[in-house]
Length: 147
Ligand code: ADP
Ligand code: MG
Image (tube, rainbow, N blue to C red):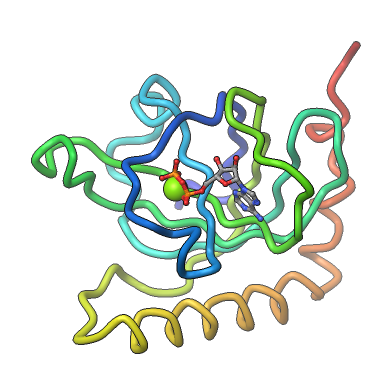
């Protein structure tokens, strides 16, 4: 109902849940950005487009979840960009458009099950974002920041 949802904000530090060790780094939005999100947006996994600073627009998968660091009273919004970056981009401005919903949050019995679920999410995002109606949003003026 809130989609497509456009959002821009600073990349903050996560809480060392080791996403990088899984090979799946997630850029966490800072707290202020998360608080500006519609409070009734469903938690779960989404797909869309993302760009760091004035960089290229890439496919992404996004997780909106409850943040264990804040005893699950605050949400976290984490973007995995489907692209290999040369460097980390903490403190930079991340622009995203959230386009579609993939699935609700789940608990997994094993790390392997978690990783394979995320790989499925990435595959689904990849497929969906190639649809013409979704490619259109990649070119949206939102991603061309004014000087
Ligand atoms: P944290 O717990 O601090 O969020 P992560 O292990 O989730 O740490 O890694 C996230 C960081 O990795 C991002 O803030 C960003 O600087 C960097 N990064 C590098 N490549 C990517 C990518 N493809 N998608 C998202 N973040 C990336
Ligand atoms: Mg993270």
